[in-house]
Each structure stands twice: as C-alpha cells, then as structure tokens.
Amino acid sequence: MPTPLFSRRHRPRVLFAETQLPHYRVAFLEALRDWLDGYGVEFDFMHGEASPGPSGPGAASVLPWALRMPPARLQGGRWRWQPFPTRGYKLVIVSQENGLLYNHWLCRPWRGFKLAFFGHGANLGSKHRNGWRERFKRLTTLRADWWFAYTGLSQRLVLEAGFPADRITRVNNASDSESLRETIAALPEERIRALRQKHELTVGHTGLFLGSMYR
Image (cartoon, rainbow, N blue to C red; front, side):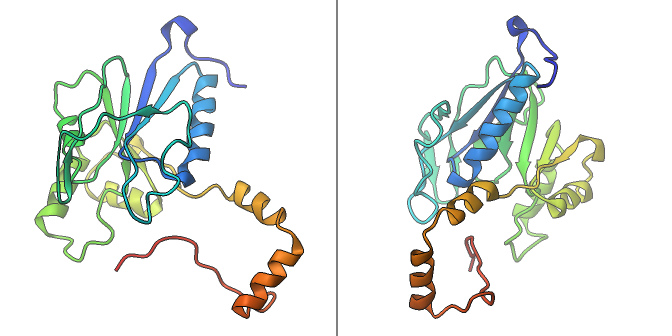
C-alpha cells in the first residue's frame, strides 16, 4: 500500500467524465480508484446514458459508485452540449471529441482546476487529416494541462501537435484480459467442442478479432 500523500481532511478530488461507461473500462476504473485512494486522492467517475446501438449494452449500471451526468441540454447530429459540475475538483479529465462542446468550454483560461484530455489527439478514422475538424482538434490539444494518451501512436500525435512530452501519460488503453482469461478457463469442455463443431474450427488454427469495425 503506498504512503498517502495527503491527509483524509485535505484529500484532493479528481473527476473523470465521459458520455457513457463501456463495460471494458470498468476494471480499469476500479483499479485506478483504489490506486489513487492509496495516495490519499479521491477519484470520481461520471458518465451519461448509454447510446443506442452496438456500443450501448452493458454501458449503464455496472459501476455502483459512479456519478450520473445531467442530461444533455442541446444535442444534434455529432454535437452535444452537456454541462456537468466541476466545483471542488483539482483535476478534471475529459474526452477531446469535437462534438462534446462543453468539454471545449472547460478549456477556458479562467477555469479553477487543472484540465486533462483522455484520447488519441486526432480522429484516426478521418480521411481528411488537414480538414477544419482536425485542425480544430490539434488547436484544442494544446489547451489542456495534461494528456492521457490511449497508445504510443496517440502519444506521438499529441507530441506532433506541440504538446510538452513531460506532461503526457501513455495509458495503453485496453480490455481487462485477466477477467477474459478467467471466463474462458471456466467454460466446460463440451461447450468449446460444440462451438468448434458449429463453426468448423480447427484446434490451434483459429484467429479471433474481438472489437468493433468502422466503415
């Protein structure tokens, strides 16, 4: 257990706010909360309602201590205005998505907290890397106090935008493979054989892609 850096009476508070809670991030948030608590830091995670469609299932009511984000006041197409409380927090962590207008309002110079972005630093699916959307994203990249980059590629993109290297943390965003391995190990052998027979799979010669695909 780490030695607390702060007393219980003066615990700094950190907020991580996302529009929804994907099931694959629950284990990461649980571990992060416990780790920060060991240093005397109070960690809150806030999220909105799950979006309809493939990304929605499992996104709600899977983290009992999470805070709920107020409903969006304005929403249309790819943009959304969804204010949430930030008073009392030393650090607020948000996504950099262009359409999340309130997150960009948090970039204002007179904010009373440190602001961190969590993401890629670019739209990796964009076909127009020099379009106005990507230029705007590169501009807002520099307005945060800290960056939590998804991967090494994300870290490089943030660096290329001119953000200081000593204020970037590479998170290596990934699924909780430990719980996945435990689930697989607990499967009865007869279920595995039945799945192989159904899909004509050969032992030792099967490749599996687990994720989502973009057009």
